[in-house]
View 1: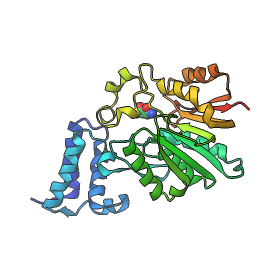
View 2: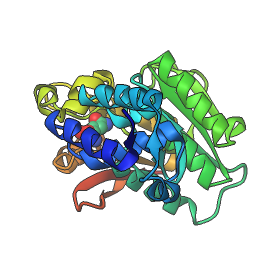
View 3: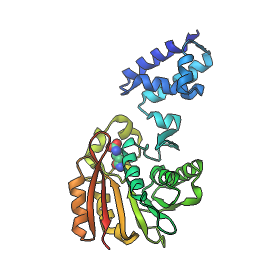
View 4: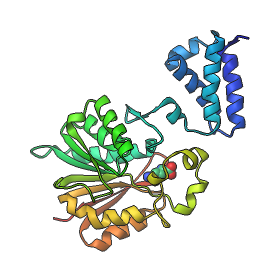
Length: 289
Ligand code: GLN
């Protein structure tokens, strides 16, 4: 039995809808493009083509996998972030558009002109490397140290740095938050998208997230603030004077995170930036001189 691609897409879409996938049409199309190595423009010219039986079988294997609610990005192995292609696998959180707000805010602060020797950036809990790698790719005067507690994540992040052509400017370090940074010196910027979901909320996230993304990258403890406490306690030791910390936060965490940093007495110029959906998403503060 041979079917036209448009017909196969219809069947796949129905199957994914039944499995509860939030965007079944897009996923069916994306997986077809992935398997056939089509880009979007070529895809629309191929809808009338007939797929071989073998092709059909391979395609429905991908659809079956997606029907388990495994994220599309883990199946195709990549996610676009800041216009760059990042490899992803289940050892890392899939980079979110929300996090581009953090990267853009940091890049904005770098526009004023780099200090002698360039900007030094620390990305704590880098995961796929999305923050450190995209900053170095967009700002040639930036060098980054990127840490993670997961060796698997660091391997992937290093591959992403190489693909973006910034390997010589990003140093990867195996470290639990600030504990393993050694003599990394001080930085102009400390950036992080730490785990910030309240532990009891984890099971209620979308199935793709709760069932497949690494809990270690999401679980912020009972009140979701565990990692902000560590950041408020330890980041000052890694920041240069008048260095800036920028952190991704949950939509309802701005007030509490600000309090944690205010309590230390070390910071000023507190600011919160919203994401494209209008939610509070990036907290920033300046280390006093
Ligand atoms: N934005 C993620 C989510 O809720 C959480 C990311 C994080 O904990 N750093 O899907």
